[in-house]
Image 1 (cartoon, rainbow, N blue to C red):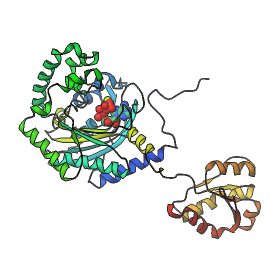
Image 2: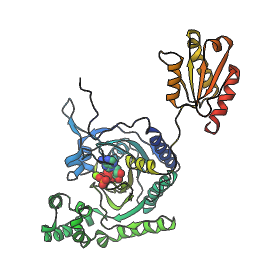
Image 3: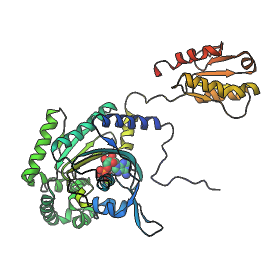
Image 4: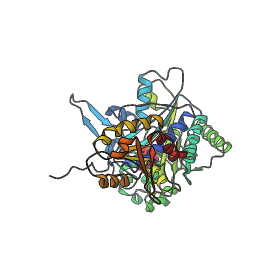
Length: 425
Ligand code: ATP
Ligand code: MG
């Protein structure tokens, strides 16, 4: 029978890779709690309407990439393509925005029906960080500092910060008209994708990576030149705070994001180390979104980190991830020994709560069990044979080096094992 495979673009994270993921998740948790952010765990399925209203009808995400289906009662639901909308929905639904700000984060899978390639998957994971209820550039700066601290903690080098301001919604509407006018004049130089976007989402054209269009886009009107006074002050305020904190950045006037809800600040952390999929983190301010989905008018700002891309950077950096190999492998030969193996292992785990101890399972003679021990990569085998079981002893065998072995009293076992765990413990 043909074996069933995973869905294209959705991959298993195998045990060899989960330590690096956990290191990333633990670092994120630690950094975020240091800034007073609290974890939210929303469901992965929401009403389709939520994403239509937030991400936007004319975006690639909603138009082409969402996993949308009718449930058994005929209601249209979607797997979440991003998480800001869910965080805002939850905060509004539970009344968390009444008279105070909320600092929230979430880590989990997102789903987009994109063309799978390196760094781009159909199920991928994001760390999502949202600050709801704060109008000023100070909290935009805080989000950027969180990102920077996370990269430092993970020992990632060379991430560049790009900033832009998209102004208020009124400015975006006026700018859109100017941009469409300019691009229509040069319609013959636009590629097919951009021509289609001219009607649906013209700002996104600025983001095109097509080398043939770079001259045209370089000379296009710039939204930073059209900002309203308040947005300009906000943007200058943010830049001044980043300079005061020693955060390097560059203003990229063509930075726009793939979701409709952004106003004013937008930013991206990018790397040259990942080829075409160089955006590791994207975010910005979305002052209109809370009201758009039925909440009280509330300023808000946030960002999302693409975890697959950060993991790729972590795998390329110097220094190995944490070691998850067992400290010891316990094998018992003979009926009596096998009966007592688990109780001995439990005593060791009681005495050494951080020990990683694997107990051999399954049939086989001594030779087979030693092979299992070898495969486990544990540096130490604990051998419980007929004689040892009778005499309350155990044999320790070094699996590497000279392969030396010694027989000790079981009561000495804890101290010896503690020595092997060493700095790990
Ligand atoms: P891109 O320009 O790479 O498509 P995006 O602008 O669509 O990214 P956002 O929606 O802002 O991305 O999501 C934030 C981050 O999530 C991105 O910077 C990226 O690191 C990651 N990301 C987005 N889509 C995918 C995907 N399909 N697979 C893996 N990571 C992704
Ligand atoms: Mg995208």
